[in-house]
Image (cartoon, rainbow, N blue to C red; front, side, top):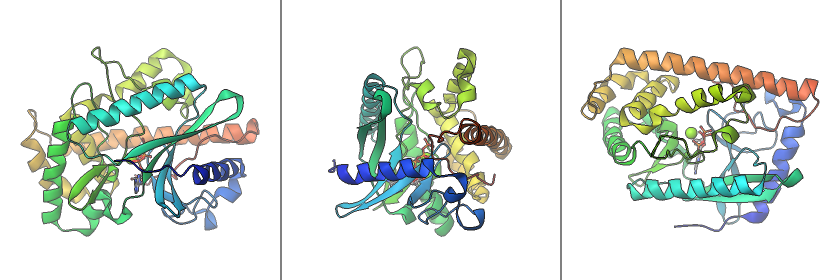
Length: 314
Ligand SMILES: Nc1ncnc2c1ncn2[C@@H]1O[C@H](COP(=O)(O)OP(=O)(O)OP(=O)(O)O)[C@@H](O)[C@H]1O
Ligand SMILES: [Mg+2]
C-alpha cells in the first residue's frame, strides 16, 4: 500500500524550512514568545506543525493530492550514508509488517544539499490527528482505554524481540477504523545477532554534539535504546510517559493488564521512578541542545540545522 510522493510540494517545503532555520531567533517565536499549538503558526514561522516528538517536529504539507506528515531527517553527509539509512528503514518496515504490526505507509523523499550532502524526509499521509492515542486517552472513557490497552499489548508483544524494537509511547499510535497504526518509524530500531544497533547512531545523534565526543559516550547513548527491545521495557516506557501526557491516573488499571504479560511484575513506584529519571535525561538533552543552538547562532553566526520542539513541561 503506497502513495505518490508530492515531489514539487516537498521541494517547496524544504525551501521554507531553510528560511525558517536562517531566521533570527525573534522571528521564529510565536506571539509573546509562546510556543504555538500543533497546527498553529507557532514557533517556526510559516511552517505548519503537525506534531512534536522529543527530538524534532513533524510538518504538515497540504497539497491537492491530500495532506502529508513530513519528518525531516538529520542531513546525511553523503549518498552512501543515505543509501544505508534507506535500507535500514525498508528492513524495519518489512520486519514490523511481518510481525503483524500496522504501520503508516512511509516513503522517503530526498534532495541534494550543499557539499554532496543529502537532505531527506520520511513522508506519510496525514492520519486524523484527533485519533492520536495520547489524545483519545484524554477524550474517551475507561472502557475504551482498557480495550485500547489490550490491543496495544497484543501488538507490542507480537512485534518486540531482541532484534526488533519499538518506541511505543501513546503519541506514536493512531487508532483509526478500529485499527492501531504505528507512526514513529524514522529511527529504525533493529539489532544484529551480537546486539549492535543497525541504525547509524552517530548520525542520528548529530543534534547532540556533546555525545559525540568519544566512543564511550556513544555506546552509553546506544544503551538508552535497550528498553525498546523487550516487552517489559517498552511497557515501562509507555506507562512512564503517561505521566508526561498528564494521564498518570490510568497507570493502576493499565498495570493490572500489563502484568499479565511480563514475568517480573511492574509497580506504580517503578513507573514513577522510571519517569523521573527519563524526564531528567530529556531535560538535560533539551538544555544542551538549546546551548548548542545559541553557540551556532550567536557565536559562530551560522544557522542551527535542526528544528527543535518547544520545551516540554515535565
Ligand atoms: N502520519 C501522521 N498523521 C498525523 N499525525 C502524525 C503523523 N505522523 C506523526 N504525526 C504527529 O507528529 C507527532 C510526532 O511524530 P513521530 O512520533 O513520528 O515523530 P517523533 O516523535 O518526532 O520521532 P522522534 O521521537 O524519533 O523524534 C505524533 O505524535 C503525531 O502527533
Ligand atoms: Mg514520536
